[in-house]
Amino acid sequence: MLQYPDLQLYIGGSWRRGTPGQPVFNPADESVIGAIPAASRSDLDDAIAAAADGLKVWSKTSPARRGEIIRKAAALMRERIEEIAFAITLEHGKPIAQARLEVIRGCEFFEWDAGEGQRTYGRVIPSEPGIKYIVVHRPIGVVAAFSPWNFPMSQPARKIGGALAAGCSIILKAAEETPAGALHIARAFHDAGLPAGVLNLVFGVPSDISEYLIPQDPIRLVAFTGSTAVGKRLTEMAGRHAKPVLMELGGHAPVIVCDDVDPVETAIMSAVRKFRNAGQVCTSPTRFFVQQPLYERFAKAFAEKAKAITVGRGLDEATEMGPLANGRRVEAMEMLVADARAKGARVLAGGERLGNRGYFFAPTVLADVPDDARAMREEPFGPLALINPVETLDDAIAKANALPFGLAAYAFTNSARNADRLAEDVEVGNFSINTLEASVAETPFGGVKESGFGREGGAEGLSHYTIVKNVSHRLT
Ligand code: NAD
Image 1 (tube, rainbow, N blue to C red):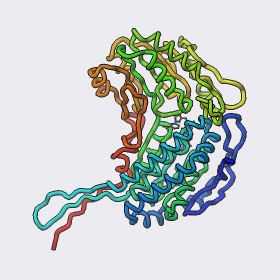
Image 2: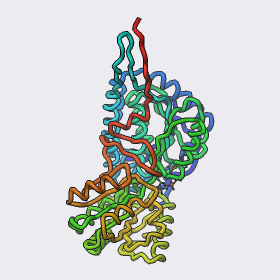
Image 3: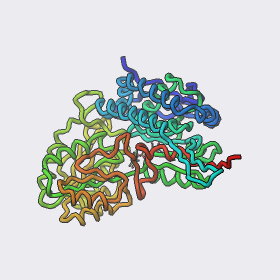
Image 4: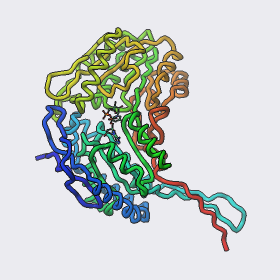
């Protein structure tokens, strides 16, 4: 029978109980399924020392051998997919089919990074006779990483995959609300033969851990995925110690629907994507700007699809959208809908909490949402779609770029001219045309403006985990 794992810390290649900390809830019924093993100061000191020792071994391990261990761990995770997906659904609430896809996606990140680790090529710079200039990429050192709760397995996979493939060791503080995804990763690496100390997993009070870890001497990179507010705080802290950061922060993705596409087909595709993971995705399509001739048909089809989505417990195979991951998201949805409604938005679907046990909120569609509604400016991070009409492409671009975010954006058009113009002028790190997939393992992912800096995945992904060293060698 599948079981939620016994939650422990993983430090220096061993499992530790830690101090029993905050409870872990099942968001489908608010029952307690575990307790966080909180790391003490001495656990963190041990993790730092272990990571420094692990770095010495791992940075001298050949990229081929590193790749072999990473691939072996990914293969174990693929074998354990049912167990891992079960744990993710239990702690996060997402439908089990989406949890399985998340495990596969996480494995794809690992497998891609494993290969990229073998391709961190340097170069030889042409020089006068008798001297050689050689540029090499070396592991940056020990990484302090912080991953969020919306994808309990694939978010940690991004950070661990990048660090390990580049030859770094890592201390990961995974999300306290969804600890099992990261724990299963650590378990797979342990079983795959990763040397002790290369990967360390801790939990606790997030601010206490980041404030303690970031200034420590062995830490050479701070990698974070989460809200812009916290990302700025960690960036400031890292800056005080002149340490680089890799920040993947919030978004508020616009979708521009041009008047040359099928509005019903586009609306249905958009609604399915919007409510994936209950909208708790940094690239979730949220602000829909639809050219006037298609507006009403698009909004109607979107709302019909939203109303048809089966909301329920994630472990039920028929469920298409589970509960939100925590009570904070329900409160945020209620506040954003009430505010938009008071300012004149039309509620075309949903708009309210479902039931009184578990964090269920109806797939919600608002139309004619004024620019001053909070939902138009604050990332909803929930099952909320905002649909507004626009006249011209210029209007759509101006509205898309109006926020300080710039993570993902989407457009639907059959015109190469429109597509080219939009891809050029919309200010984001990831722009998708006629698809709502923002990134895959082999493409670089990250934001501009307040959505962060640095890229994960793609050929660029490992660059943050390495330093460039130039070696000048006079031949004697
Ligand atoms: P939050 O800002 O309190 O926390 C976000 C994440 O950061 C959590 O995993 C948390 O454990 C961690 N965190 C918080 N303070 C920290 C600190 N001082 N040091 C280290 N880690 C810290 O917000 P929340 O209520 O958990 O989530 C809501 C918002 O977070 C959303 O509106 C969304 O904007 C953002 N978010 C973004 C992503 C993403 O993929 N970019 C993922 C999850 C949450």
